[in-house]
Image (cartoon, rainbow, N blue to C red; front, side):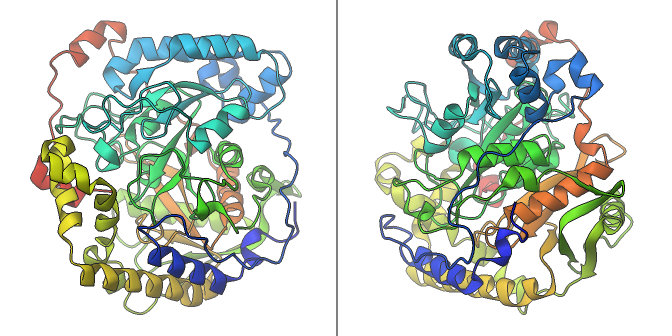
Length: 534
């Protein structure tokens, strides 16, 4: 582990230049981008130790295990991968008719792989993972929950999937998602499918954006961890909604090759996990250069994220791994709501961490203008452009989300150019103004950090009186995943929100048929989609 995190060794101006070039070649996708100026080690460190103490409750029920705990048991021969997988498959059989987290469960394929793996040393060896259904899976349908891809069977795995499997991960199934990654999970014609694992009998509770199936699969203990994609909040939002730790990395940290595209300059793959260490284990496996994706090239190497996500004690007190200023934006914890109270309590906890300073920050000039919906709509033409032939051929293929795709096709070139310039200006002000005041900043929304390619981490900080999770968001500097994980690890060493699990839904197998056959959970109408699109 280096004595300074990677975000202190990256030249922020070079990241700005790269972002400007990325915006300029958004529809090309094959142009070499400027390298990031980086003053640090040029090689990826060896795998970190993932051995972890196993909590008593997790020993009683293996579906409670984190990745680190399960890997510890598998590595020492106390748990066989097939036994872990069978426990998850049993829960899927009992409860997924209610949760509807999965599009496809790969029971036979997963069991065959688990039995073949046996005992191993990797951090993901034998770990059951849920994969969002816009990641290519070789020989297995990848539908993006849409009419357009309903019969698509990819000839290869997405780079991220290939890497997860190479690390020993087992794909247990493909998860429900918003059609073409636009809204919460629905059928292509807008009928709501996936529910929030914390309120399964109330479909109106938002499960959190297009990666909602991935979030529900982990929150309901039907997979150890999962992957999602974020263009407008779909890793961070479902993690906050379902008591998970989600990590959207810096643009380019993880390859997008083999993922159904939405926006060339804003799509980010990343993990939805149970805690900071699990998120670090997942991202370590997924990240790195890929010759098939120019966005991954010319970047700093992947650092030791797992050690960064391991809590540090000094004289029996929790400290943050590197001295860090956590910036608090105006109004973040103001008010009398349960969310405001949870935020104040979280800030108080962070203030007790050694070497961590909570500081008030001011937002850059014209923040409200540069982050408003009009400029955010610059993403729409990028998602429509690859699908223009399909739009021209048959609008019905886009189902309930067709209005949003038409918006992108009809947005004027002048609006698109102004929006791209505004995005670069916003990034410059975030780097030069906001991050002069702090190292990490708390946020109330995934936007605008997803639009400008900066890393974000979601983590649980409490619950409402109705039992719905409350989460918060940390935003970081370019390639600041280490720092975000270190802050989250310190917070989670002092709290237990991330260990809490929802109660199993009533009825189990008996309720499955009633919940899946003909049940009306509501629907999203076409006119609502533009305001809901990620």
